[in-house]
Each structure stands twice: as structure tokens, then as C-alpha cells.
Amino acid sequence: RRVLFRSTLKEVLIELEQERKKRIINTFLYTSGIGSGKTTLNSICLYWQMFSLFIIPDAHKYYGQMRDKKIAFCILSKDERAAKKVTFIDAVPMFAKSSFIRDYFPPHEDIEKILENPSRLPRELRFPKNLVLFPGTGQAASALGYNIYGGTIDEANDMQMVERSKKVSSKNYYDAASEAYREILERMNSRFPWEHLFREGKKNGFITLIGQARYPDSFLERKILEAQKFGN
Image 1 (cartoon, rainbow, N blue to C red):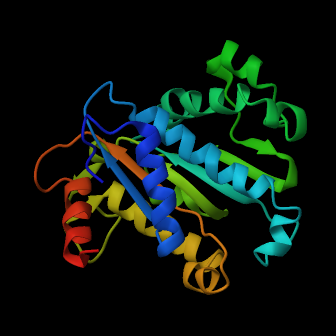
Image 2: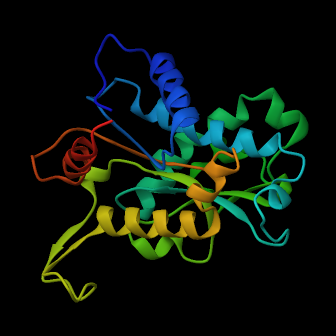
């Protein structure tokens, strides 16, 4: 979705939820300029998805997961520092302000202390019911080892692009955003297959891609063109 200035974040979220009732949506792409609320919308999407799992009495059983396995939400950015000190810190207050989270599902770390001392961010934020929120690097391998339900790639157009990289064999360049997106989607679908869930009337998680519009061949612009080819 390209956001028009007349559209409020609430309207965007309502439209997204209405569309999720009609069809499978595994990717939500949001591009706009500075100060338009991208980070806020991103944080709401993370909170919204985690809330939907908290209110299921037994989310692991509901989704056919082993109880000792973590259900994870990942936050990726152009590098680990950005993921932790920008995206992670912006997302955490959404949980700190929630009386629902504080009263019923408080994380293992004191969120207020995290916000007071951002230099000592935890590697992951663990919640009851074995739910985890973790910040990762711009490398696709950050997603390995987690049963990922949903997440976000922040500032996706600013992630690493390396020519003649040794990280890939079939291309002459490494596109960090594209590789991370592909790997996260594959992990989401292998653990929470959206077609199967949709047939059963169950919701699947989704990944949010946010950023500013860049050059025509940037990652988000390419994803927009792909979506337009599918039509409605």
C-alpha cells in the first residue's frame, strides 16, 4: 500500500484487517515520507499480532506447535545496531503502555529499565506462553533457529547491497533485504502454513516492510511492482 496523506493509520489498519478476512496476506508493505507514522504503524502491527496470540488459551496447540518451542516475532533493520537501538526501542514502549500486557503477560525483563538504559538491551524480549520478540541484523541468518510467526523489516530500502558477494552463488550481488524477506517468509510458512490455516479459518502472521521510497529498482519498489502484477 502506498499511503496517501489523507489516510490515517487507523484507516490503514482497518483496511488491512478487512482484507485479511477475505484472503491470505503474508506481507504488508508501507512506504511514506519522514514523519508520516511508519514506525508507529510498525509497532502497532507487532503488538496486534502478539495480542492475537495472547488471547488464544493455548496458542501452541491451536497452531500445532510443540510447547517447548518459542513462537517468535523478529525485527530486522539494516544492521544490528539499528534493529536494537531504533526499531526495538520504538516497539517496546507499545508494550510498556499496555495495561493488558503489564497485568497479564509481562515480559521477563522490566521494560521501564530497558527504556532507561537502552545500551543494555536484551538479546530477546521473552513473554509468557513462550512468545519472543527479538531484534536481528540485516543478514538473513538472523531468522534461523526461530519458529517465526510474524515480524518486520524496517528501512528495507537502506539494507545492504553488495556486488560480487561470496554470500550468494547464483547472483553477482547480495541483496540483504530480499534474502532476509525470503528466508523469513519461508520459515513462517513452514511453521504456520498460511493456506492450511486459511482453510481452517485461522489467521496467519504477516511481515511488515516499511521504508521511504528510493530509486526505481529498490527492494520496496520491486515488491510493489510484483504485487501490481497480481492485481486484486
